[in-house]
Image 1 (cartoon, one colour):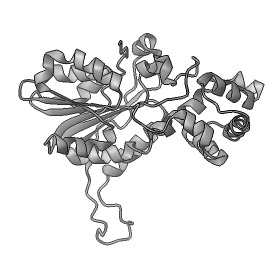
Image 2 (image 1 turned 30 degrees about the horizontal axis):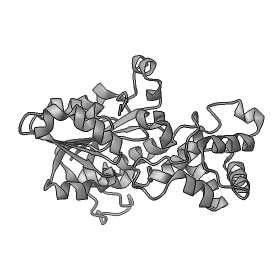
Image 3 (image 1 turned 90 degrees about the vertical axis):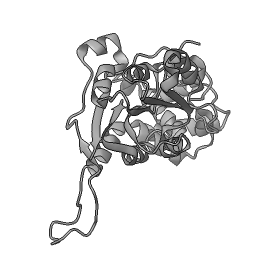
Image 4 (image 1 turned 180 degrees about the vertical axis):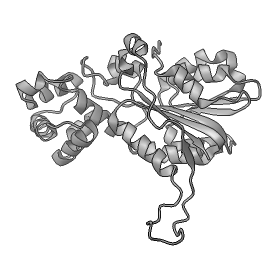
Length: 311
């Protein structure tokens, strides 16, 4: 099993983690261990690396790639949103850094049977964790029309969400929609011909929206950042790579909120909220991939890296 994935913003991520050789570092989205191995290489015998991923294939690839460093590596098959429970079970109270590379991996996109890609016909699945009882087929065939519209509009930022949801419901009244190819054709029918010729592939936004719903991708970002911030040692870093505006907005706003101390109205003579500043924002503007990286890996085009450190 080959887990091919070009790690985005690799050097920038490793540099901004400010790795201490004897520190404890977490990669919450381990994938094929592209970022992970570079973190591990900087650790000595006293250091510890914790790799988290919910994808079974990622663990197979990572175990092989990290074999030479297994004395300082712990791998956990779970969702990074459970970071507190994961570290508690490992007996770890504090960490020195965490990296989150959000979104779907190149491997998941390219593995046809996973159903992530709108370019290849496959079963409607889109699960990052095959233990997840919810998949894309269930969403497409059982969600109410108004819920489909909301998901496609909010998670896909698709202006034709209402028509797409209506066409899906009308089609499934005749028979279940079971493949990505069927869904793509329905989306194409729903979007007027003129609009289909503009911008990206007509199914791109809807597929993104359904994938986000299947994997709870957006709703877990803020809680994970807050949980990780509590676990960081003073000066410890959290690095988050996002790939679309919805993810980036959540990361930016969560960092901003954790960067504030008092949030009382200015007319209050003394602070009543007792809010404490948790993070310093290291990157006021996100770090973007270079032109050279984008040329090598076009999927890096939309990537943004934001970094904060524990106060």
